[in-house]
Image (cartoon, rainbow, N blue to C red; front, side, top):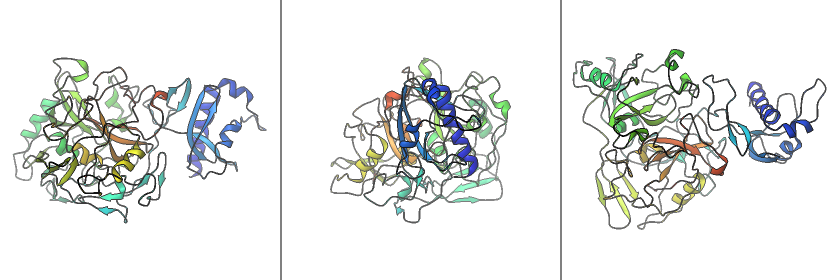
Length: 470
């Protein structure tokens, strides 16, 4: 950890303790020069632990969860507040926080540089482009990739699927050799409304072709690259053009106080949400993918909403071809994957979900695993929303359920991605993002300690369902 990172983290823990825990702040000892020292509990929590290890300690007003680290110019290991959760300001350098049990926790986004592939990953075959996530994680940090049977084994990086392969024609057209789709390479700096974007694609002539269209959400998500992490790299391969918008993008935005320009990469798909947008009957909405923060959500198609767009051409991609195998499994011939037909009614945190699939023996096979986020999204039925699943073949015991993927989220590696097959609700019970959206949850912890996540008050569950794949 470099000195700048240590300085930032130490400043964050001092802010947490001094501002949020006045009782403890009064008891803190002072060093020469007036510098306040963290409480002894922060030191004791990291006794005999290595740097980066998870830790927690009790305070008069609640629990501080964090990771062990050394402040600058101090030969001492301290438990420093773990940075995860709701962003408060549009300034990426502004302290951010979320109140848990009366304690103002520091929740600065904790990203990471993510490798493209672990050389020891098992090769799996399918027709779903790989996520490109090749680094391994535990509940809070980047780690060396675990061995089979160890905790956290079975995550995205332990398996490598169809290697994305893009061919640049030199004419502004990129061909994806897996999906056989051709994509517009260029980034449109000017954002358009849904119908204007749809029309712009239909009017496009590029590479001597005029049959361009707005992509559906499965096609658009096929381009997602989960090496992405805000301020590090976009959630799309570098072969495509993309730029972060300027500050003007947030002028007049009702979520401007909880979003930064690094989060404003929303790109339209043609997929209309079949449910009720935001609890507002009669409001048509379409799904989009955000190539700057790596999430699927929905937005109204009318009323002044403007997003980016990227056109595509070719045979429509993403439909499923399911076969019920009669043994508790379903094969999707279109994507080359076999799925557990129904969940086991058990909700689990992320490491437990990984272990469940790794140890599953079903239909005589023991090579099951938790699907990565692109594989999981491939079975969403966007024509449905309660749940968004073809229940003629795949069954869901709780129609409100969300399902874990094996993919960590690069913006905050203490979280992993899930897909909402049930409605994607806020803490107020409002279907803010739509069934079929893709979000991220803390990998472990107590959901009751969370008020919400993000500017749209995402519900925090932590305990989600698992549907295994092979």
